[in-house]
Length: 410
Image 1: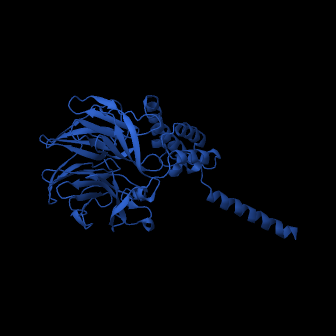
Image 2: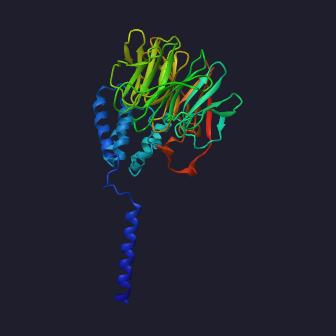
Image 3: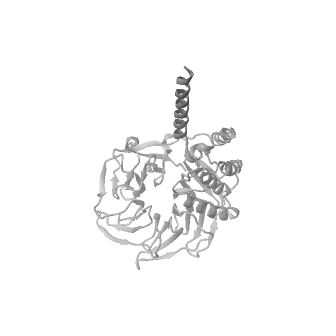
């Protein structure tokens, strides 16, 4: 009997081992983007000693090391980051899930959640039935309170009336636009300016439509190389300022001469994204992965906004000026949040923070928004993690797009 059973047991054991090996991640095989991630690690390590917001650099390092399977280095960076009490949440970052086998991981996450409990203030304002829109930029026409929203997937722009009626302002394929990111409406004539933001870095454009949706002009980047025009602000009738996330630059665009000029910033920026202008037009704020820079528009002087102890202004995807403060959609903290930063009179320091929405379904994947009166409208569930290039990764996970609103108060 043994001669019969033993080979059967061996086969069963080998099959079990093979099935277990198939189920386990193969940590010996580096991810396809390993070279890019290694490069990012080297760059972040160079920035780190000079960053006033050290937690932002440490959290990105933890994320990158975890992505490469270097768990010891990832956990070391994460521990140092969490010790700063700035609000980075390891439980909200899928790449950091590989660290959960470390018994200290839950302790770190619980520390963050005690220090920064969930905050819920938002209410659903509009529901867009088109689930595969994958929206990005959001802008308001101050003359009509109409909202305009761009689509990464279809390269189109929809308009949303005050009663929630949705229609196409620019139809998919109408002008062969790329994925839409930043949008702004000229308050004088109602024309719409916007950016295209291809992940490939090829084909970025600044475009201009009249109030009826007719394409007036489109402008390509001023230099060779990869470009991703992200967000933008209009300053009067003559100037536009915009971020270029892949070129790691911010530009001024002259609306009369149709020329770009690079802004001189006080440090190297890394994936610049949100951008805001003070109501008087004198201060420009440029956000990147590690913080926010303030630029004096008249003199060109630049100053890093000091976040203060136990605070972070990093990773502002959307950035907006509101009554001597900045409203930010921060989506690189592990768990996204909407926050308002009250600034010093000179605009150089954060005096206080109010977290407006955090760790709720209303900030599942927010990116940008628009301030209408005293309310901040923002996209709660852009679902952009489910889109790679022009391919939807899992159509079964698509859901209607929700635009939420928060009352900012005084």
